[in-house]
Image (cartoon, rainbow, N blue to C red; front, top):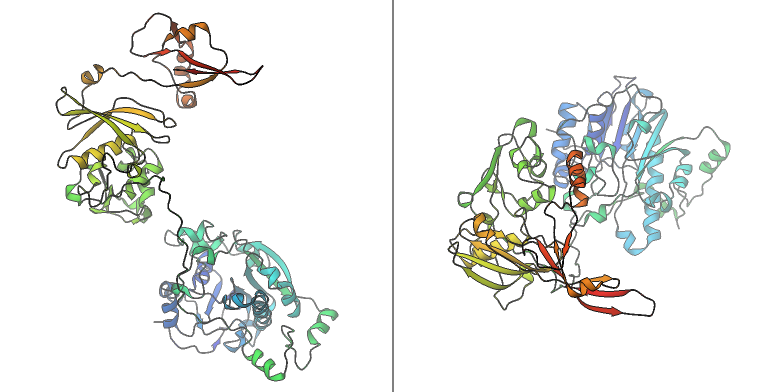
Length: 601
């Protein structure tokens, strides 16, 4: 077990030629561990301001794992109670062999309490922190050693990093993005250390790797996670830990320069010789030197009260669903997770070509919708989180859409015939016609709004699924079958016909049905006499959407081009099947010399 004592650490004199790095202010020790994983050949000493191992684990729940790997697997040291402004008090490095090649500090921060009082005071506190950190870090550096600091946003300007560096006799020799490989700035000369491979259990959570927190970090793939000082007690939003435009600054000592030496030596009795701040009396200066940069005490943050957004009564509302017990569901597909898919996310696994469920999901959205609606079960338990990690030998099952509906109106609120329609996603049933054949079948006429698909059981927001769910709850105990007879484009609104019954409709029943559509369009231009009288147009059955031609073979495209796709126009009545009757109903002129707008029905 790691020791809870914070004793002074004397560096090891072995491995004199080994590259030695030390981190300060490394909250959960994930940066130190990630650096060691990436470059196993170097020595990495981790340090934290927290006084003991038990306090570290109370603050960061993952710290027990990170410290254990550093100590037991990598045989590195973890030092507690290290103040970044007084490193020499915990680490003595009297000889050159005991000193370090680089000191690293990521995103120093003392807290935001001073910011609430004054931005100037907040910036001054952190300028003092940088100044005293640079001064203290120099005491444990080898000749030619370097100091690292990572800042983000406008911190370099407002915290005056260049002034702090100059006061410590340092110069900034490199500025690198956190996304670039660490060896570009970590080693002073061309490194002989090879970057280790990333192991499956190394990467941190996706939000630490994909730039969601403002900047990507190269070591996130090795497990580095940017954390707040208050650790698990932090209850704020991700915006409050945003580290956009993070930059690694590398500093080295100035070569002997008279002006620099003079600047550093000229002090007064009431001025700090490190940060050059002036104080009213020697007592204040003495207090400042004892505790130059004290972080705000860690306290549980109260949740931010946010003003609720005004509700939009006309907004679409998806009906709420509750997954059924697994033994009540109808299984469509089921598979067991193999070793090569171990520790992967459920959404990713379900779309792999060698996984049976991928044959059903045509897109990532279909897969996500199915999981969030409780259609996907892992080990017979419904999983509503698409980022769920599944393990080897887990059983993943996909059940039928309507089987995930709870058959009680306690969980699904469907409107009455005169009730509000927002729960139905804008769908309104205008007429029900009972048919003799097939028996028990109803022809339902439904109004479909713009933006809704007519066909499809891949999600709950299609007209087919809304109608099926409506019927299932109106007729408890029955298993409805829905067949859309007509179809409108997703971008059109209007009436659609659907057949609902307890059994699937045969092709004979559908062939005997005749449905007439009436719609109007506005066109520019003077209509011909033929259109004013009305014409019949035979629509070709081998039509094809132009934007899908890239999916068709060149041979088939050639046949389509050679075929007769012209619209047959006739003044005499054509067969109702596959034909349109077009007639000009009205003509409107809106200005002399301008085009005519006509209405065709």
